[in-house]
Image (cartoon, rainbow, N blue to C red; front, side, top):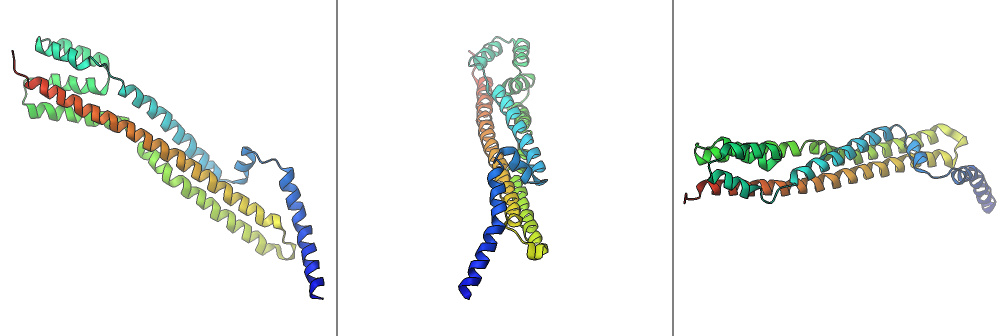
Length: 233
């Protein structure tokens, strides 16, 4: 008798699971279908991904432009300063339109002041240039941490939905009720992790590039101060 009951339960379970399995096979697994299954949480993740990609691309272009430097820049300014052509040197700096040129132009505008005053003015300009390059990075860092959390929120909501449907199904419980909730939960988790990984990689790469520019700015500041302290022949 026990074996008979087990066989009946097995038959019922298979009959209930069969439609869900058939639907899962019939429905092609595409990116759009997965996004739709994720529910409204995917809207936030989509916005986060668009903002993250925009910041990464826009900042990468700005940093690439700022990192370009004429190898003869400092030598040319040294010649202008040694010949007393300060005005010409400033005009050339303003035409270069780079973080280094902005710093040197500020230093040239302070000639005649004390060395500490000149260095402070140059460093202030350098700090402003670095701050301009870092625009958007705090938001990118926020997305890298909040994105996965939003995905996990979708996971919890999906599981709650699944168990809520099961609790209210009574005797009409089917495997599809549980599978749909788990489907939603897993999709939002994956989407959140993807957004977080992309944002974090972008943030770290951009931060490393900005760090290289900071080192260059410090080097050029030292070179300019050494130029002012060179003995007059």
